Image (cartoon, rainbow, N blue to C red; front, side, top):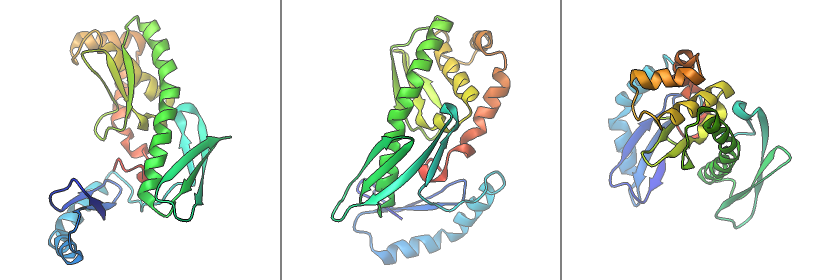
Length: 227
């Protein structure tokens, strides 16, 4: 259950690996929440059954180790509870990210890990994007790191390249392809034949990589909340 100040009504999200999240407006009674879940029990089961064909059900658990294939990193995670804290902060050193504060609050821990990953993604992706911009001779104006739920990246008409921090969890060749893909939108803001011809100049295996990229959401860990 996730309380929300912005939600105006109860809603349910079923994630591909089986996790169910009930979004609850503040001051909603527990009786109303239980009744809402019961009313939607059959729909929840149908959704979970549908997802189970392609995704292995997985219960939520905060990570003790994080694997980031695109930068060949294996990161340990430590949790240090702090009495009276109502926030969680992070520190990264020696291949270990340490969370300190109200570490019993899972959502605060996830939010802290997202902030750390966002900074790490910028450090990892910006030099790669700069190098590929020189290779393709296609400039961009700036890089923006986000955590989109439906796409790996995008490019605006003003030249901003937005990249999903979840790319950190993918194979490096997929990240490279995605960067090339978004840069090429600087020449063609569509998926026309000319666009794909341009992409193929810099990544001949684009068809295989594009298919793999579309299937790679399953590589994003459950705790991150994309699902």
